[in-house]
Length: 418
Image (cartoon, rainbow, N blue to C red):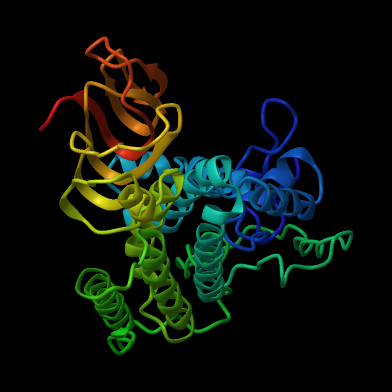
């Protein structure tokens, strides 16, 4: 057997072939742009990692699946020199800080995927932008860490096809002599992997980097922006949708992360950005618009003309009670319906009908319950369509057509006054 090491300088035993003849599926430190997922896949399957990078980008732009898969690979693929992936370390209560970007990227990938399914790119674009910023912040952090550790990255590694330098030939064996005094640790056993010719690193503590207030300032600015939009929505005639407000807050947090990439101190902004991105993806997945006032609202239209002028009735959050029992239909053709459109983003909607009218109902809820006089439905995306004759059994005094929608909550239709 040869006395030389089977591993070239700068690699680890993790690059050995696995049971199937391919290297194990690990994230290498020398071939990574962000976390080494594509480099590990390329090494395992024996193809250029650029192919996997292109595939992830394409999947991210069409459905957001690339963001989700890359985040899962980051969590489930161990790095070279480690025995457990990040996901196991997090479950064991260790390495949570290092796993924050991977967890955030995976969560955003889930949101992008479901937002794309429901609303196409309308709800997915803000989340894709945040995912790209998280990848960029992680890339800059990875480059700094690997540079400090003296590890070659894909950008500085020798080009493919250039063989590594041959290891030095061992000197010929010499006659045994007197025992030598123990010398310094061999360079190949040193944990830092540095040559003994280099001076030992100084034991003096490194000067602490000045504290950065970028994260605090960014969160404060986002909170102020959110408060101003809430005041404009509730205290003025401006109608600011929840999606727009969350998108503005998310843009401020993303800008803080970008600034923190150059000046430091912005890494922990990933946590609030992740929370806002998840909330935005949940709101984007709701098909009912989050517009209108919030709170408790009772609507009692008196004439069909009033309904035509005021409908659609909309609320963001809260409880809407629409009392149609006193609706005057005098002089109208009983077959011509009075169309009423009402939506609540999250909350409850109660409709009260007179018992002498014909009713056409189309009710949709993204998540919740629909209770009609002729039956009920509940769960995810229940919908009910019904045509109800007058409850009193007589000829209809008129026709009312209800188009009802609730994002998260309940729709209830009753006969009689509240």
